[in-house]
Length: 408
Image (cartoon, rainbow, N blue to C red; front, side, top):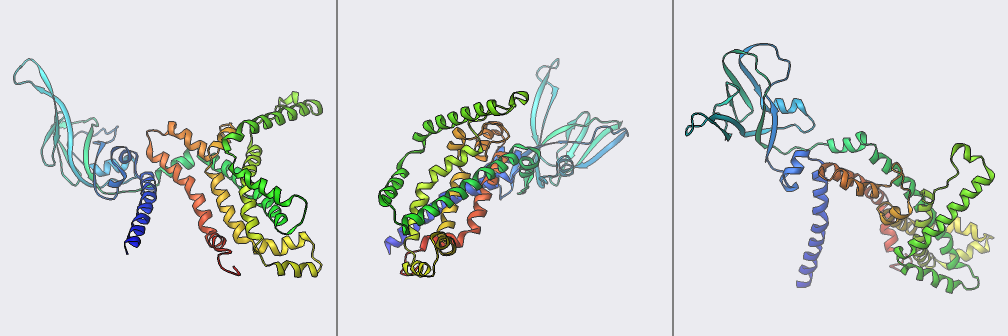
């Protein structure tokens, strides 16, 4: 009983540690800039006191009035309706100069929070507001008042909006470009290694050739090679290939005319090759362990019927290995999509070709004081992996359970 309670407590703690940051991320991305800067995400679901600056009326009013009426919430929502403001007005901050009673020849600056219903002097008129936002600005005689900006503190109702997502997706072209670049990198970097690994796994499982077991051991040992250790030789290799390709352009084309001789040493292709190299050892190991567990009698029957290795692989092995292939595809997709270090050192450095993790890292400087925009970009980067995982979840579960029982 104690062990079960302890395991449940630990599980709940793990879920809490994972869920709270995600809720904070999504909540902040759906809040206004003012709210995200002035209060924590946990206050987003209850009324929160926030400060807003509103104008008493629009410029250009040419009619002389004795009394000017309006509503604070209407004024705020006319200026920006993406996050409609509602609630109760708690006070208005006023500062103005008045006669100093201790020194009649001088004035002093007073600052005061005026509650609802209390008149205050604004540009020679009496300004009174109510908790529901209605205000009346009365003058002793007809006058043409200039707009006055006032700071109101409002016990604001919870409100959410998608303005941050609209801004990063449609007003800032860098995020859509990063999304496209990430797809260009991730899709081939997932398909290529899983295809090569499937062929290799079949060969290690059901084909006989000299040194098969030693070669498989060597491939498994490659999994312990740190990614950072391989960066230097990889970079030197790609630089050498780029120099060789540039020289070929000089010899066989007239690229000098268009100044297009230079071949970049960092591109989408270099990321495909690098992610394929880093992903192959684990992919071969996992798929080989799955394929070798398939019924031997099934393959023997296919050979008796005259099927060759390619036919057996395409018509028998691949359909039966869909759970394992899908499981590793999910892992590879998530690794490549969220990768930062490989893309930073091996990937293209052109501003329009940066993948999403690098774009997010650069936005820490661009949107450092705009948490709602930064969090919206982070949520967008999470949506695609979540969709991929949920769409392939049933294959993922089957792949994890494959071989756990006899005949599985």
